[in-house]
Amino acid sequence: MKVGDLVKVKSLLDQAYVGILVDIKQKKELFSDKHSVVETVTYLHILSGGKIEVLDSKDCVVLVLNESR
Image 1 (cartoon, rainbow, N blue to C red):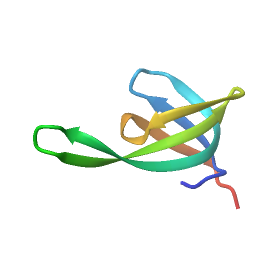
Image 2 (image 1 turned 45 degrees about the horizontal axis):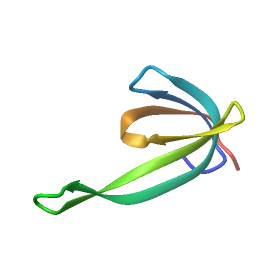
Image 3 (image 1 turned 180 degrees about the horizontal axis):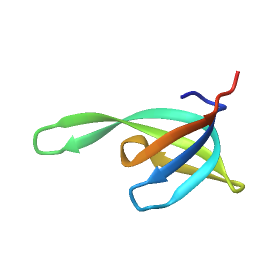
């Protein structure tokens, strides 16, 4: 999966998006303030229906429909 691919994404909330993957960003977030545990979260930016949807990759299932060259 890479930027430019046509993807179908189904989130845990049973929402489905079909669109172009325009960006993949990794961000470090605080998981536990008490124990100072940091986790890396990957966000997928998908252009679908004229809007950019930002989804957490661990909360969705991604199917690549067509790979870009």
